[in-house]
Image (cartoon, rainbow, N blue to C red):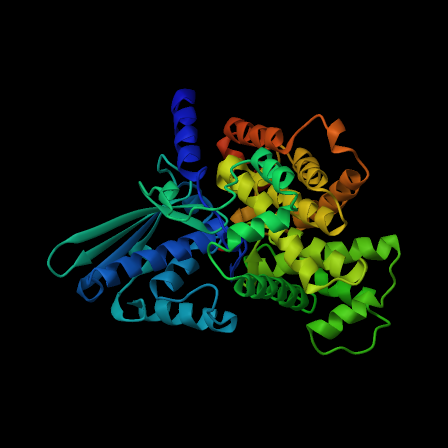
Length: 491
C-alpha cells in the first residue's frame, strides 16, 4: 500500500473516531485478559453478531457459522486468546460477568464436542480447524484488527458482518458512523485545548467538567458507584496477582514475580485475610523510597500477570497496559495522605478524560500505533490523575500527561511469541514510574513555561504511529519477537 493510501485511510479513521462521545466507562471496562484489542474486542464483536441474529429472528435458522480473522488479529491471535474470545462470545458469555474459573471447562466442552450453542440458545456444529480461520497474510483496509462472521441459514441465505477491534475493547462495524450519537454533552471535548478552555471559563477542575458530561449517561450516584466498582475490581486483581505463584500460561514459561515481592515486603506483617486487610498491612509496612518503588512495580506486575493468565482486569485504557493506572492509584491509596472514595473518583474521572482525548486525537491501539498507544497513553492518564490528587491545577494536570507521553514516543509493540507477557508486563512498571515522575515534575513547574502542549504530543504520537513500520505494531514480526528464540507449542 502506498503512502497516499495510508494517509487517506488514516484520515478516514480519525474522521470516524475523532467525534465520538466517550464516557469514562468506555475507557475503563471490566473484562478478561490478556488483550483488549485481541481478546475483549473480538469477544464483544462475537456477542454483537449473535445479538444481530437474535434480534432479526435468524438465530434459530443458523446451520453453520464461520469466523475470519485478519491482520494483527490473525498474526498474534492465538497468543492473545482471540480464539478463546470468539468461542466464548459466540456462546453468549459476557467478559465482565463470566466466572473466571469456568472458562477452561466451557472451552473444553465446546472443543471436545465440536458443538457451540450460539447465544446459549441455538446449538450448531463448530470445528475450529475449519470454522475459525486465521488469515495471516490478509488485512482489511480500515484497521489491522479486522474480523468477519458468516452465518449460513436454513433458507440458503448467508448473513455476513465485518467488525474492527480498534483498541481498548472498542468495536465498530464496517461503515458504522460513531459520530451520529444522540448524546449532546454540555461541555464537548475533542482536544486538551478545549478541555482547558472549559476549565478556564467555568472555574472548574477537570474532574468536575467530566462529571457534568457523565451526567448525560448516568446519575451522580451511579457514576460514583460505578467508579468505586472499577477501583474495587482493580484492587481484587492486584490482590490476586500478589498471591499467585507459578508460571504464566502460553508456553514461554514466564515466572510470576509479584507474589514473591509481596511476600518479601510484608514479611513482618500480621496475617490478613482479604483485600482491605492487605492494603492496611501495606500502609503499615516500611515506607522508604526503595520499598515504595518496589511496591509500585509489584502492583503493576501483579495486575498484568493476572491479565496474562486470562484473569479479570480493568481495561485502562487497554488490557496490555492495565497495570499502570491501578499501580499509581494504589500508590496514592497506600502511601499518600489518607485517601477517600472521592479521591479515587477524582483520579479516575481525570485519567479517563485524558484517555478519551488520546483516543479521539490519535489511537489507543497497539496495532495502529505501537506500544506508545498503550503504555504511553496509560502513563499519561495516570500522571494526570495523580497530579489532580496532589492538588495540581488543570494546566499542571495536562502538563503531566504531556510529559509522560513525550517519553514514550516511538515505543514499539513487539510481543515475544505473540503473548502479552514479554516485554508487556514489565513495561507496565516503567509506565507507572514515569507517570509518578511526570506528575511530580509538573507539580513543581509553571505550565506557562512549557514548550510542548498535550495536543502537540498527541499529534506527534499519531504521526509517529503512521511512520512506524507495521512489523512493530503487535504483529510479533519485529523487535524482541524476532530476536528472541522461543519454542511455543503448535496451535
